[in-house]
Length: 204
Length: 204
DNA sequence: GTCATAAACGAACGTACGTTAGTTTTTATA
DNA sequence: TATAAAAACTAACGTACGTTCGTTTATGAC
Image (cartoon, rainbow over the protein chains, first blue to last red):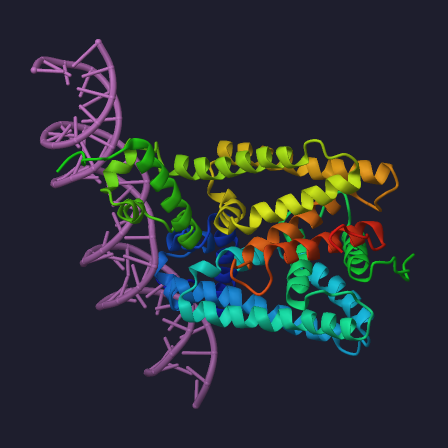
């Protein structure tokens, strides 16, 4: 046997990325063997190299792809939203909604930074800073306008991000609370935490 | 060569645990080889087996040891503290202080649960639930007394825990803010988030 | 219809892995 | 001081790893 009937490079590449994400999520980067990955997509191990350069390159693709999509989607969600209160509200809702359905991406991004080679890790770290800066800017503006109480912008933004991102580690789509309820709960926690007073929300 | 002069079993075992924690933190459980570990403590690979049963047993020892010490220390910190406000305050301060200096333990506990064999993972998960229940109890009591606004106890406790535990991922002892400032910032965030009003603190 | 290329195959290379076994030397007990 | 136990050694077992190589078959452009 050689090339299979109906085989399509882009579809195979996508299947490799999907199975790779799942296997790294389940076993870790070092714990996933390329033989396991090949079997998951129905290939021989060597055939993977028609679609990936190295195992390390696959990890970097997965992690950087997630960061790119995340930042791009955030910018779209914040476009046209004015004022620190509304922008923070939009940030919280976006970040939660985006992370609720991507628990594998989130876990891999947080636990496998150490498995990236130095240059790759530096690139991802820069992308994370870029994303975090958008929240920090909202907090700084709100603090300057007297809307938020922010004793320290970087630490406060880390605290908020940790709280929101943490949802990905326990959320189940068929769980007790639906996504909207979870978002509302976190928005209140964050808003009250920063303003020290209850904020009336449109939803009631 | 055989047994070394001055060698002491308990001291070697402790060195193995310390080096094992660091290596798992740096390379992950699968990424740490027992040959690396042996070299880190100045032994031949086979000699490790005088002190550990298997590589898996070492991981379980590290993770469960951390959870035991954490829960025990929390109970000591909460002993005699009365009332949900004071108990939440004590919980936040304790959890942060304990995690600030243990970033390796925290990371390993959060990222290597998947590397535990099923029985071991179940045991650790039970210990985590036991710890989390203590926070949930504080929140439930506070909500019943009308001190806290808690639309959902489990999700709120996850949110608070994620926020506090996240500090371990970026904190540096020689960083810009000292531990006390970080604790104060998070205590305010949590307290205002739950009460919707500013709480005067003893420290000002 | 020809033919370059894409996409798969089977087989292997060299290395590293967790673990076991048997041996040797130090320490502690009586 | 004899001796059992502790704690190290050397050596090796069988397996699995990431990756490379040459080959084979299907696809798509002219």
